[in-house]
Image (cartoon, rainbow, N blue to C red; front, side, top):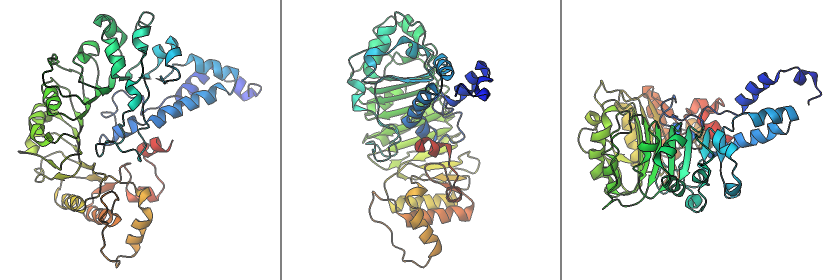
Length: 431
């Protein structure tokens, strides 16, 4: 290829920009993915998709093999994404560590795999790997003597790595992580209290907290002053109550997943502390239907995006409430739940969009049959693990009658699906 004049005549600085664009991804390299997305209720599913990061690695490999010129240019470009694995932990080079924009330590599962459901319904795109805690090396801690500051704005790190870092002088760790804005701690046995001390500028925090905090004497952070997006998987009442004591003045986007039986009792206290400024609230409860106690619209006066698994719906919001989008996060099939969503489509006058937990791809044939044969028996599926196409069709018709946008979990309406349009979220899964 280097012998072709059209390639030879292009200045290296132009190739630098072109190849840099090819190796960039606006979604996975965004440290504040929810607030910058036009679909905040769907943003994290795409952001967590590891297939996109694998695609970037493939592109880098292909581009390096085109010519010596391209290889040199690609090697000069920042390594936008770097993921350590069991095969490269021991030989991780400082060059890759220091320059990566999205730095992922340890291995993880494929978060786009719909067949691998997380134990909490609606949370399948944040599957945590059993091997995340298995490594014995401490990559960042071992390289701190030669790396002053990471370039990474996004850091995905297992608890073992984090604990090793915290044994180092805090001033050194703070300098090392000074550019980190998105932090994901996988398999956190507890919620670290030292995060705001070493990452004071984070805007996005995701934690999987699984340990009972009774008797835990950790210091409550005075404030996560810049934190706008918080994603938590919690399975103890103490964890949720403790997080509720944090200072979160900038929190706008909250996603909670839980298997906690007592979740309903401690949720009001938590939302009373953080709900006044929330724009988006997404809740997945694997144990019980969600039941809001008290006037939820007074607690959430600014929420525009609300997502829930199966719930006892509150009364419709008042006419001046800003709620616009409701997301069904319930992947199981419960006819009564979609019947409630039909009522929402008909009577919640402010709701402009209902995002449902299914894909058109999985029911296109059945849906078409229902559209063309309205005389077929009104028979609904009784299998709670299989989405009932008739229930979906009934909800679709209710939305159509009132002009409510009805989309699948990839953000597509039935018309968009039929016209071949693909949302950015679906493109993330199809890579």
